[in-house]
Length: 307
Picture 1: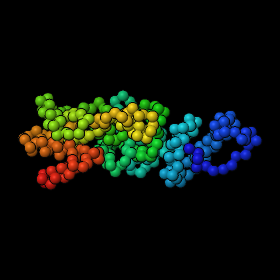
Picture 2: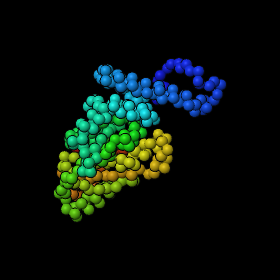
Picture 3: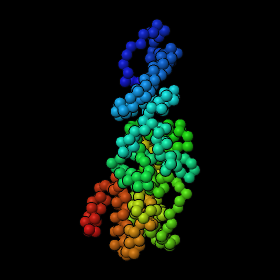
């Protein structure tokens, strides 16, 4: 992670005419590496403390390398954790301690774990971000190539902290609270809604669940479990998770039983009912960028007919 640095080190103790692997294993080279790492961390800390505004302006350029250093060097992490910054969707920057203090009051679950929410593509996940914002949740932007590894590092280092992508579940379920929304549907209606939407879904690996959410939330939301999605992302990057990369995709289809559209679908009959259910599912797929080809064309045609 220090490849950005250029310079010359003069030392009579470094052997010449040896292989690179032998040189890298040399104790003197390791000492020099540790010393340079310490000096870089100290300098960054000095810049942060001396002129934070200037440091924040530079963070976009140096953040990737600082994160990589925190992942790869334990001693660098110990120093960098005090000046490393994370940014949210409002373009605000915080140190790790500052951010925990900011979100802890509202984003602590029933088990006392502080939950950080993040987006790796704010434009594509805007609907989920807005749903989280409606609950006064803050959403980080973690979209660099190594942020999957950085997230795991933070979860290991930060006490009682969990990090979830904002589209890993519906907003009401992202942070488990003691409050429980009541169903407006009867048990028989829940079964009927489940059957209707199972028929409307043509993609494999979709598990339908009718849940009691805020009536203002979307009628249908499609999500992938945070752990499985993260493992698949790491497998795609060649992170040694090939087993997960080969597993079929599995999604949760959350039907908001308290939404007025679900009540409308229950009252409808025949083709109207199936079209409404299919339209709601396709909207959820569209929000996740999963509606393409012939299915997208059919959705557009159906939308015109429903107008």
